[in-house]
Image (cartoon, rainbow, N blue to C red; front, side):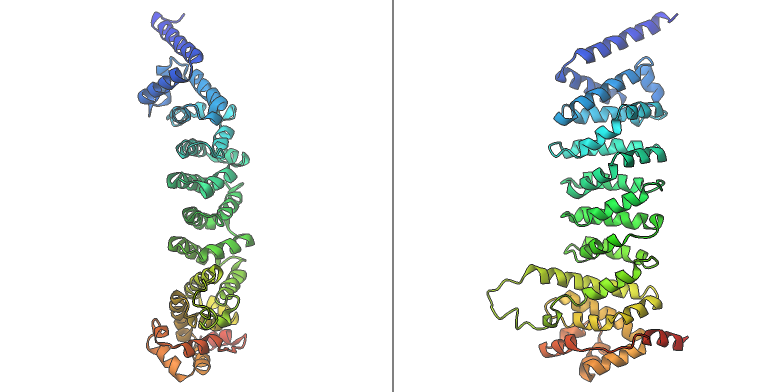
Length: 414
């Protein structure tokens, strides 16, 4: 038989549970406040002692009330924090299992998709999902099987809270590791974030793609279009993350398509007019269309990326030459409408000229002695000394480099 002390503890527990069961919103809110204040950070044995070995009975009530009221935001923040005390309790794996058995993961994910709920409530939901994911591979799989990647990607793309976006990113990164069955799903979910309107979400998605790229292996071809689009972002922090990801793609099957797309970005549609202001300034009151501006930003970023990738290996540089990259860089240098295009393409062009003597020879023949001497004297700044006629000459010049010359040059130098 139970001792008098044990019987008294059980009686108090039953009274507490009855008060909860009969209490309304205000009374339950006070109970939650007291519970959070008194039990935050407790271990499983300490919680069981607090509830006379009946802590699971209270957790079941919390979870049931959550499922009944989460759409109405009834004490939602306090409910989630209270459940978090159980799920984070050291030695409390059984609490986690009990929470999952009654559909806890689906409820948390549904919270993420409700637009009328507060961002702070969604953050608390993500924190609980992180506790679930931290429990091991099968729990990560459960989240993914419940469309968790899609929910988290949407939260990352649409949230107005930087903190919520960061929490979503951390969880997506966690789901992409030690979870081979679903790591490709996570990767594709991150790709889906790239076209969104939030620069912060794009930056975080790119960071996570870079972090799990080696684990995933081959990148899907669907990555290239959104990646090149964010490479042309007006936000430098987004551009930077896109540039960081590119070298990791070079050993993969997407490499030829990636290099070709970068070279193509050097000569946007209508590029012969890039160096000439005559058409764009014929009407002094005309507004510059948005598309060319975005194309110029992408042109500059592509020129910068080409310089970075060419320096990765001579083989990459030769492939770029065969794609007629030198002509593309000269077009970009001649774009007097956009100085970053001129600067980055000049720096990249310097590498090709200094690395491949035949490129130097062909460029000299194409642009003439005067322009070429300006380039050799100061590759980083020569474009500032060009006049309009020289810029037009550069943008329209054609370099006819035989397809196999790059490989011949490297062979001769070996």
